[in-house]
Length: 115
Image 1: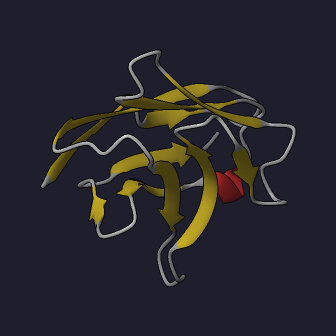
Image 2: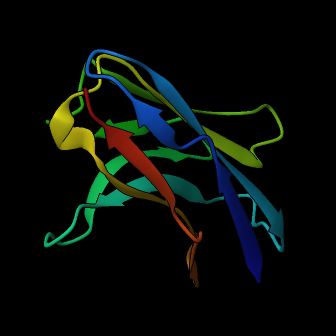
C-alpha cells in the first residue's frame, strides 16, 4: 500500500502561481510514476503531468510551458509548480502513484483561479 498526502491548493488570481506537493509513504517500489490529474465540475478527470522515477516527464498540452512537475531526491515527494494560472485551471487536483502492479490516489486538493 502507498499513502499519498497532497497539499498546496488554494485560491489565486489569474496569472498567479501555486505549488502543489504530494508526499508518498508506504511500500514504494523503485520503478514508479507519480502524476497529477485534475477534475473540474462536470468534467472527466484528466491527466496534467507525470514524472517517472527515472525523471522522464510528460505534460498535457494545455499546461505545457506553464506547469513543471518534479520530485525530491528521495523520489518520495512530487511537486507541481503552476505558473501563469488561468481560470480554466480551476479544478480538484489529484496525485497518483503507480507502478507495475498498483495505482493509488490522493484525496485531492482544490485549486481555484478567480479574480
